[in-house]
Length: 454
Image (cartoon, rainbow, N blue to C red; front, side, top):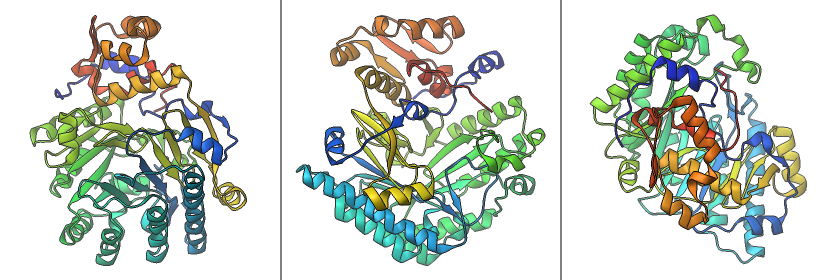
C-alpha cells in the first residue's frame, strides 16, 4: 500500500459531513425487530468461507469517561457469573440449530473476545465459555489461527496469561490512550508505562508474542506533544499492530462523556497533526498501513495477507483472511452472513431474559437485498484493496459499475474533484489522500448518509 499523505484543511472540512467510523452495512439504525428461529438461522447461514466468532464481555469495574462501548459497570461479580452461563446457553442454541439442519460449521480460524473487560470473568467462567465454543464449533489448533482477546494491561499477571494461553489465545489486544496525567485524569483511566511494559513482558515470557494496541487521539487535555511522546513510548514495547482511533465526543448518546468539558478537547488542527505524526512516524520505523487506521509490523501475519490481497474487514477490524460469516455472541453482538445481518439485545436485562426464554438473543436485523450485498462488497473492496476492478464487478454482479453507482460517483466528483479517487474505464482507485479517509468514502457507496459528530 502506498504511504498515506496529508489531506488539506479544506478537504477535511468537506469530509466532516461524512461518518468517519464505519458501521456495519446496512446501518444498524435501519434494522427492524427480527423473528428468529432455527429455520431462519439455517436460511441465513449459507457461508462459503471459514467463519469467525466474536464474543462480547461487557463488564468493567469502573467507567472510563471517554468510552463509547456498550458496557456494564459493576463490582458485583454475580452478574458476570450469570452472564457467562447465558453466553453458554446462547452458543448451545446455535449449535443445536446447526445440528437440526445437518450443517457443519468449520472450526473458526478467527475468534475475538472483546469488552468491556473480558478478563473481568473469573478463570472458571471464562474457561466454561470457551469450552462451549469448542463444543459447538470446534477449536482451530493451527498456528495460523488468530484467537485474540482484549486485556486491560493494568490487570495482567502470570496466572491470567497462563489461563489465556491454555484457552488457545495467541494475540492480546491492549487499549491505550496517553501517558499524560492530565489526559488520564480527564478520561478516568490511569496507568504507567512501566505497568504496560510489565504486562507485555509477562505475555511474551509465556509464549504470547503478538500484541496489538489501540491508540486514541483527540482526547480531552491531549496535545500533539503528549500524544507523540506516548506513541514513541508504546513503540518501545514492539507491538505487532497499532490501531489509531479518533475520539468521538457525543455526550448526548454516551452519558459517560457528559463529565468531559468540551473546551478541553484539542482543536481540529491539533487532531490532524496527531494523526499525521503517527502515520509518518510509524512509516519511518517500518510499519505499513492496512486500511485507513491500522498499521502493522512486517512480522505480523496481517502484513503478508495485505501484500497478497487477502485481508478482510469485519466489525472488529481487519483480519488476515476472508470470512463471509461472523457469528456474534453476547450483549449487543452483531452477526453477519452473505444474506443477512442481525444484532443481539442491547441491555443486560433484555439479553438475559430472551436467552432464558428463547435460547438466543437476536433483537433486530435484516435480510440483505441484492443491492445491499453489492454495496457491502464495494465497501469491503475500498477498505481492504483500495480499488475496484470494474470488469470483475460486472462479472460477479452482472451490472455495469459506472451505471450502477452513477449518483455516488457524481457526488464524489462534485464534492472532491479528483483528489480522492481515480476513476477510469477499468478501475476505481483511491488516491493517497483517499486512502487517508477511506471510511468516509465508503459511506457514500453504502447509499446512506450519517452525520459525523465530533
